[in-house]
Amino acid sequence: MEITASLVKELRERTGAGMMECKKALSEAGGNIDAAAEALRKSGAAKADKKADRVTAEGRIGVAQDGGKAVLVEVNSETDFVANDVNFKNFVDAVAQAALASGAADVEALKSAKLPGGETVEESRATAIQKLGENIQIRRLVKVDGNNTVGAYVHTNGKIGVLVDLAGGNAELANGLAMHVAAMNPPHNKAADVPAEFVAKEKEIELAKMSEKDKAKPAEILEKIISGKINKIISEVTLYGQSYVLDSDKTVEQAVKAAGGDVVGFQRLVVGEGIEKVVEDYAAEVAKAMQV
Image 1: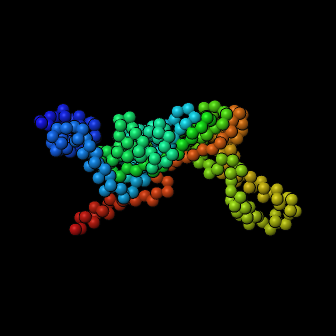
Image 2 (image 1 turned 180 degrees about the vertical axis):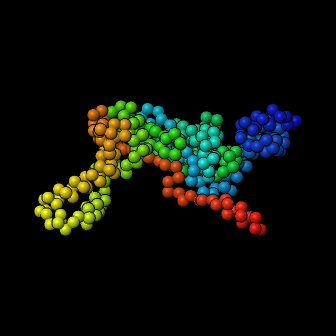
Image 3 (image 1 turned 180 degrees about the horizontal axis):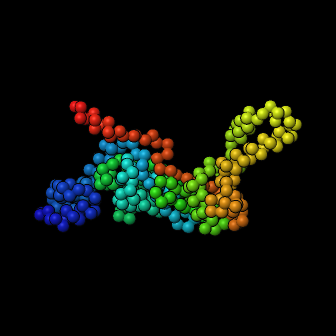
């Protein structure tokens, strides 16, 4: 069968593989485009395996939401250049939608979820690796699945994503709170969520910082001084205690209660957090190459 330019073009659009790879696959498949596409998919998986050990500390956060259900996925690439490629962005969006539609509980389950085109997320990942030439990994998935109001926010650079689970209140408040969490990164939700060990350590530190004159004050006065300092620290490390970024005259707790709401919890993802990035010294690499 003659391998026409239109056939090569169709396979290329379908798989994202290079023109010569498509032409070769069609020739080996006798012009059968389905068989050629399958061969390229297998080839992409093989290439994905070869790249699997390469560090992926860049990438994007994808979000998908439907009422009280919402998901965030972190998809990593090796470079920020690929993270900003439209094909990578489309892949991240597709993965987020698949996570929401499938109800996958974790990344492992998400791999077998189907995309609209019929391929699985894992098969699509292999194709993306083949097309973009970098290791691509789906690292994390978090979700809210209930009947509450959900605030979902991904920052414009695609690097930070937040979900807020809000009982009561309204969508405007939920989304505002998601923006607040993205900006202020509170470690805890409410004062009751702060570990007792943290409070005890802070009390110890504050007491050590006090002058001997203050330490000599009556126990009840000393306790009030220490409590005031600890309450300030707790307000800084809790969502409810922080000043609300969209209305600095109120704390988040005041804004939430004024709207008749209660924050059940929140989740925040930052691309690459916890991954040790490899810093390439290209100047040194070129200098070394010139000495050979």
